[in-house]
Length: 193
Image (cartoon, rainbow, N blue to C red; front, side, top):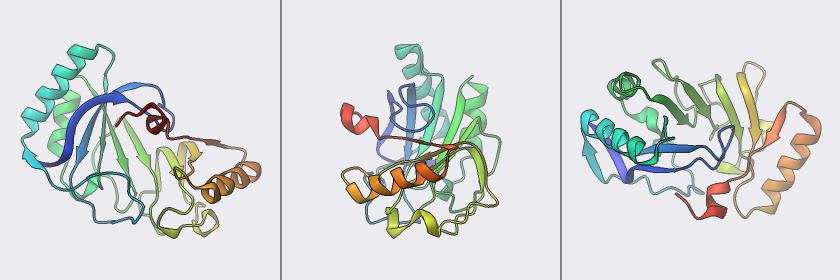
């Protein structure tokens, strides 16, 4: 059983990072061990669902929207739950399972894409497909985060919505770190989940 947030399983357009603009199916898990003050996500417990029913809904959404081959699992903090059976079932149903995490613990299993957005300066998951740094999230300064042992294919800075200070920190970071790109939160502009 997987604990889901009120949004549960839904189709949307990815608004952030490398896949911004890509149609996807999202699975929003409930619960979060991190507890950010600025969290914009309703991750409170809503219901428990079986892996089979979650994957069936993903298949129905893929059939309805045609292009949705990626399933983006987010939260809250999805690694608070055992996602191993869900991950295997998504692969078996010919999806590309993606995981978005704060990096609070090591990611287990084989994922097609791992996106890490550190919510603490001592995050544990130090590798993946993409890294998204959000200045001022949980009071973090970009300069406080030790990135020396990190290995990510794509690196972004992402300003917190509505924060000029966070945007300014991103602009300074981009000036000194040429391998990073800016990642907006397009879904908020589009009015999508």
